[in-house]
Image (cartoon, rainbow, N blue to C red; front, side, top):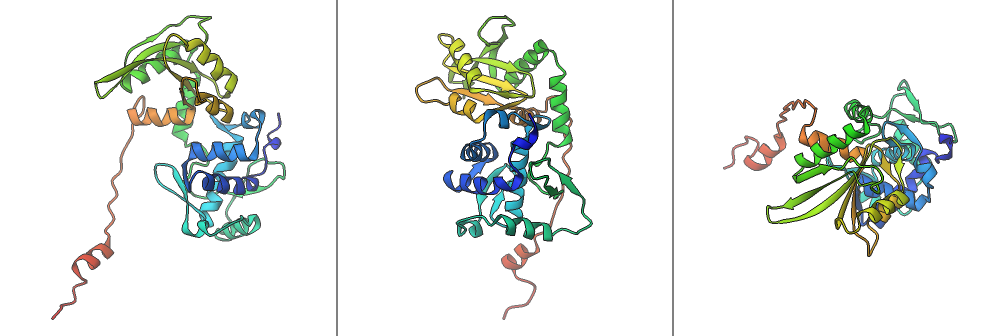
Length: 297
């Protein structure tokens, strides 16, 4: 399927903004993307088109849309990846697509290089230096490549190690075929007091996990555990997220490639993380708190 079947990046402006409004004014990237894709009624086939690494073409264009709306002053985000509508944005009823693009591009020098995003209108986007995740940083891509290069059993063993490092106990990899998609089981314990069994499934590929696959996994876990976990190096379709939290059915937690590499970094698994300290003096704080040196009589 040609990537041109994914709408141009500017078509994501309105849905992204509307999604944040419907989510109460703030949301994580995952929540925002899922809601926006739902508003746009993107199909599973469109959402399955991969741009790079484990990032889909739709996610990539949504990242550009968030960046443009942020540069225009309608959105803001924290270091933890929570997005919110700004004061300026709260007074906006409808997005002026042309104004956003012209204003943002005018802030950058003409000599700046442009990057094609291969959409149906053959538009191009500025290579904007942003603190948002537009494409996976090289270390994330390298980690995903390492995981994709593992054998199926190797990825199961990695998942077992990851779960143990995350606080699970008695984690076992079944390694059985025809087991309904269950690759292992373990016990998660909270505060050393409450614990319950969990079964998990490992999917080592770059595609998207569908709602049908989540339903099949839930069927296999019945009678074995009340909690399920699916770990993939790829992504999940919006329908898969809905199925995982469907009312009246056991909840299944989903860990996609983006969340997986964040957890790997948090646990320092196979990574050497160097922290560089930078200290900046807040001159205003000194002046407002202790005065600016002018004697007071």
